[in-house]
Length: 373
Image (tube, rainbow, N blue to C red):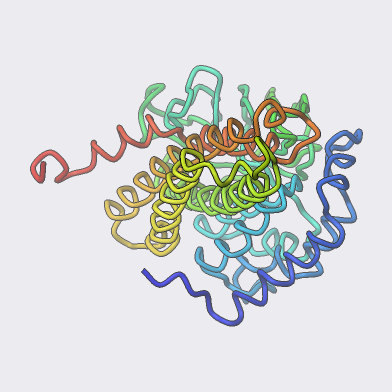
């Protein structure tokens, strides 16, 4: 597979990397993470200025109509920089708006950086099953229920909410999607910091008024397609994080002295670095394939490729992260070392929008798998 990006894509990546290297260093990031807000308004303004918020938005709404491959370029750089701004949550929310249609004004605000979004999809009892929905919506669009681990829920101006308007708890039919303003009556947000330095929230709805996205009771196809898009973005972010932690580990092996020589000269450690590299490159291949196929009109192809990528990237993230921590020795888990922060972020990516076990089961469940086996 050709991993060469187009000139325009590389320009986006270079601009983002220059900003991260200059203004979003590891120490600067630590200050942002430990601030009261947990995010930086100045960093968000820079992302807007660089066109990152406009990238995935259609041209008609002031965007660049970027593809998932274009977004992969951005997410890789954000992964390398361990950027904690609510970018992923917002562009995932924008994907819901694009797929559902009818929310052009809101997409314009996203492109301009005026509106941050969060996707309130998961529930405490559901684990990774997005079709397990107890949050309910009445015919008038009033929503009651509780959503767990809503990424950047505390920083959002509006929520994309999945709610049941019909059917049983696990049925895909009967799920509706709504937009609920952060300041709507009946919305309560409990914000907290996650282990990787990002922000999440528990969001409770008590009769909060929502605006319907798409067709009532028929939101599952949009929900599943948007979640697959989000999974492909997370795979790209993981590749960037793994690139960074691999490079940091290699540099450490070249400089750490033991018995009068750099420990990178020891063959056993060279073999472990080679194994890390193989895992990383295999994950990169599938992450790129997911970015290409996530827009496929063939739903079976999209599900199969995205789940395969999420499985392989999750496995690689765990292996590369664990090996990096071990090769750094005891320092690998200290707050002072970037490796520990990459490791935590990779662990959270693996658990977001379905872990490896969840996606392996989804992959196996696709038509044709057992016959082909």
